[in-house]
Length: 499
Image 1 (tube, one colour):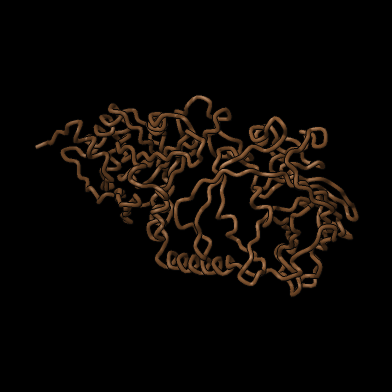
Image 2 (spheres, rainbow, N blue to C red):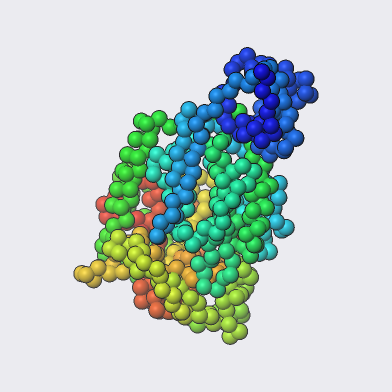
């Protein structure tokens, strides 16, 4: 007796991963032609009710008196695990299913969001220049999810999240969706970030929508998710073998040990330090290979600690980013406004151990007058540039009174105000900028092309918290690059900030 299928049964069948005998598959192709359907190499999963009926009709026509299909196990299982201090996903993948590549295109975005240029900071993201909001869409196929599972990295999907961040669980176009809300960490911001996790358990993929730093209601993120055009391509990606995973885990462990070893604080020798007025010969010895690295000479001629920088002496055009970064933090008299910072308690490894406290602090301008000389006989390549600006670093002392080079010194303090970008080690003022246009002004303003033998005198200004001035140094990179630092040489050298 011929079986008839209801619309609900057809939908249920078509949502399973089907194994269709070759004879029936060929018959389905004939049925597609009878029904006027063109097949493509891509499968889209915005299947409307009418399409389901047509596809089901094709299957039934092809099968004749019966539809001989075998439903396999669920491709992907994605379940939330809610703990006291965290919320994570428990994921499993059925390797019997091939991992198809995924292609995602948004069909809806809120007003004002434009796709960033690949050469900009917003490359591959949708950015709202007026509000500062950013939307990112990331797809992970089954092979990528499987790699995360086997490397033990699935907790990274919800890193820092707790159950209180989970605001809604729902289904969108047959996918299991969870919405996470994170409020801004900044003390003066009412912006938030909404992460939408869309798991298609039948097709074995994850799509994440990150709606960051915006005032948009959560419903807008849902609209974005509902409008995603998600295509499962015919092309497949192989799953990692056990040997590959074991090798990756071993390499990760070795890298962890290497980083931990490099991150250990190490006492700095006396020849790490230079005085104001003394020429820094960087580097001051050849590498072990016998090849002479770039020879750049710096001199810190004088340092001043100032409350304000008058426009008459420090023209506004010499600030790389005056309107965006400086204006809101300067008082009418030119002094710096107080700002908030986070202070994190650290363990002996330099990692934070608890929630930070918030401190309100005052800052000063550190003005440094410098000279640099390109002492190379011949530049190593065309368009040779010199980084003329040292970085501000804060050095601590060990029990013996020796200053330490510590990679984690920046872990203790972080800005607590949104848009506060004055203290990331770089100068806020440079009176001899070469790159003055577009993104290069923001990202490349510290570099200047220099010919062999050329010298340049210039003035820089930095912002430093008043209570940290006693630990402040200018740090210069030695210039050895990939060459090993020879005995008697240093990777970094320092000049103490003092008037």
